[in-house]
Length: 162
Image 1 (cartoon, rainbow, N blue to C red):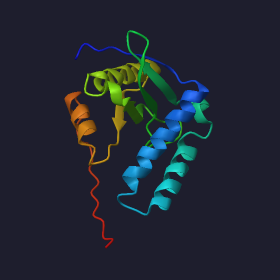
Image 2: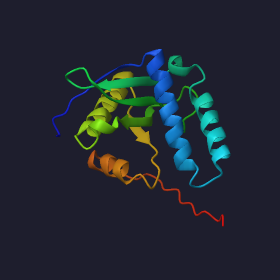
Image 3: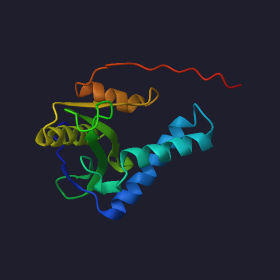
Image 4: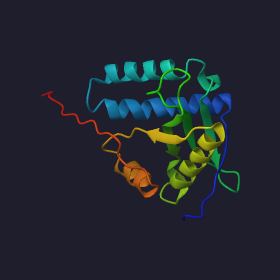
């Protein structure tokens, strides 16, 4: 499975719309475990508007579809400048989202999409690739660790809602 290879290509407008809907729904689901669902939806919408003000045409952001060697879509990714850096000062990239379609999971495609995202970042001129992952997403955490990513900071949370 380690021999999987993917090619990244720019999303079409329809793919961008679908990927955005899926990404936002997944994010809302995760956030709603820690806050009211309506607040989670609003924060998610605000995040998309903030980081992708021009949608798929937002400068410096790469919203891509991953295709396997047979040309099948196996996943999507969003790579852009590290949001922790000042405007125009980012030397490192940020992996905002990586998704492998359900029928292709646990077959090595996650690592392949991640490797292709790293190669894209290098071509753009970024020196590092960072990301954030929800603590309960054990599959993603395991993938990132297998691919050489380490914890650089940790944010802990405890719900005090009844």
